[in-house]
Image (tube, rainbow, N blue to C red; front, side, top):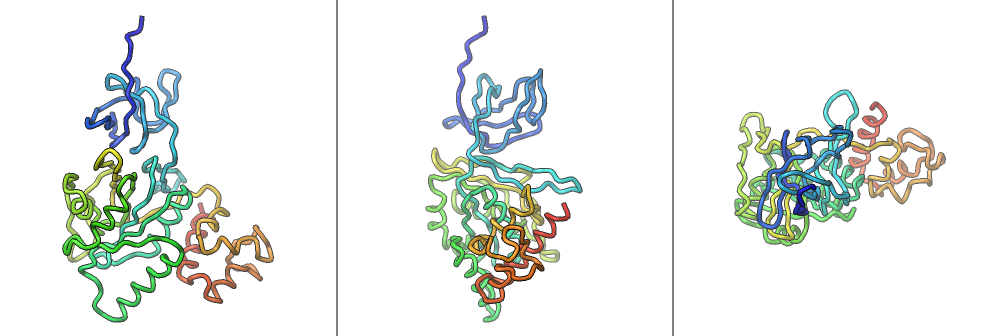
Length: 311
């Protein structure tokens, strides 16, 4: 007779090579899959789904019994010549796309990649600007920043402005995070760990230093890791990204991931077959000319389209 198992349901907060950490109530349990498998592979005739941070799992006596169905998952294209999906985390309520005003300067094309990946996964995005104490002093630089952010705000993306040095904007951001599972993503050095420490001091993280000469941040987080702030509020930290490849599936789906293009899709001469690149009588290109679509965002679309066609 098999020994009765006291099965509990918990949340995966970290995934290692040979085990996973599972949060249940106020405790963390280090668990394994049957046979010690933690990645997607065959084990005694049974295929396990790859476990992600954020997954809900059933476990007993330190062994994962089952991965429960996911609400969603956030992915990128794994670096390398072969097109492979790299799943980052699961069951996410919102993406916090973190950019710094300076050191390093914001890369808007990288933000467009985050937003596109979030649209693919159908996950809302909050844009968080950090290091507002380093706000550009030059009139031209300040206007460029405001104009760039206005494009995203006009599209419906919320923007929060923060400074851990001046402790500004933290309370508003804390309210946006409350009661949700949020994944924070950003380029190395933008201050994600400092921001998390300032928001929730009980969640201590090591903080990297941006090199003065290179301006490139040092990685302080090796993989996705969930911080359980309270029973309803969870933060998923990710390693800093300098590049972010899309995992799209079909190149023609890219147009739907740019919010401002959606109302023009199907109105081109070639209908749904239009790539909005060099085709005549393209409604999207006409909208760019007339100022209804931001030219820089359109160029982001074209760059991503070229990548998808080449993959």
